[in-house]
Image (tube, rainbow, N blue to C red; front, side, top):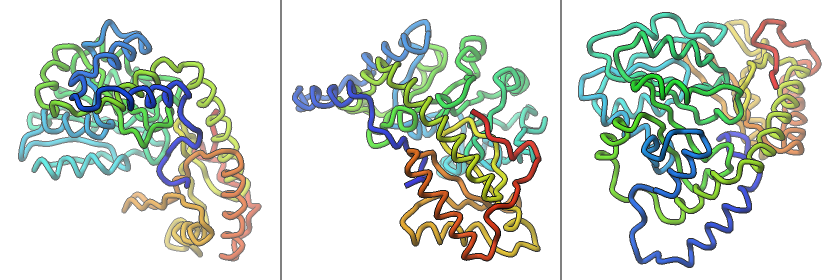
Length: 351
């Protein structure tokens, strides 16, 4: 299962113990509506001044929902890059708002239009690292974007633990910078549904008026708190996954794919023979071949930008099986599996 960017490894042992302990607790009582224990642990872990800089949520998706509800009214505008997380558009549609897409360029950089201020623009959303590409914008570039915009800028850092830079320091410097995070990816807790927002305390206080009273249950709060105390486990798992990411990218390049440098727990790849009007096969064909052989990856198409395959980082054994079946898929499509990938910057793999 390499299609939803889950962590292939079990969660920290301390988290499992915390869940067991919480399950024997007073579940007949409502949980702490502020998730205080988690917020304290997260503030300490992230080096924030205090827990009042954090808002907990039922996955970072709920946090994003709260932000759109808070800042964007019916008929007002929300800005997002393209291609990126498709939920952003859905949240705007639910709100009756307008969404404006700004296309990444071929090097996965954003043009100046993304930072252009506008009176009816109420919120800008920026996943960093981005999905499906896994690419990042440097935090100093994001700081300049935030300074240029007159609306809040939400930096969605769902995959940031697999990268080497983050935007937490920008939050302390600019109250219009807000950072969302999740425990679904690096911490291996996708089934738990827990995420959080980092913002200045006055912003957190106002957003707390919008969330559901008990949006995080007692078991998830206990587990998320334990996760924040599992730093050595996180460092070990992230190092293993980043090494496997390089292995996956190298294997795909040997099969002739162009692989975008990734700073997340997945890679985005395209095969030259499957791009353009003269394509002799399609990425959808490879996706279907893998699915028929019980390997799930994500086929994505972003007209007119193009389509490709997003493959999550699994264990080494899972990646070996995936690469083997991709090679067989190319053989079935009468494509050579030993061509040289493009030498463009987007073809390199990064650690």
